[in-house]
Amino acid sequence: MVQLRSILTVADNTGAKRAMMIGLPGSGNRMKAGIGDIIMVTVKDSIPYAQVKKSDIVPAVIVRTRKEKRRKDGSYIRFDDNACVILTDKDNQDPRGTRIFGPIAKEIKDLGFNKIASLAEEIY
Image (cartoon, helix red, strand yellow):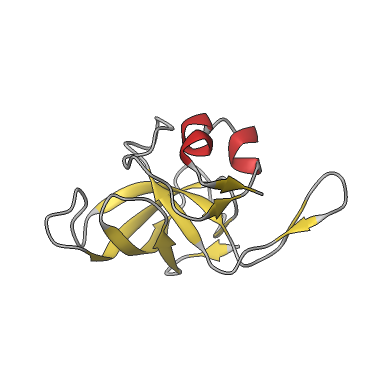
């Protein structure tokens, strides 16, 4: 689970390194997000001359969380960090970057983020 003001690592090559969650659009008063949720983030740290600059507000999807998630078969999946992938816009499900670093959960592919799943190094 990721909540407001949580710091996430950015798992793509847009140039952003760290991002902070600032909102969960279309969720009413829900304050927590999990794997596969589209959130709004602000970029906290980025490399020079990147696609995404520091303090940009962009949509992102959560691909890894430290909090375990229970699957239908009874198993649990959990990762070492909280990570997100920056999207082109919040209505579209295409990533802005061209590479995805690190593993992602298979729930991402099940939720319709096929482009992210095909770019990922490994899917758990």
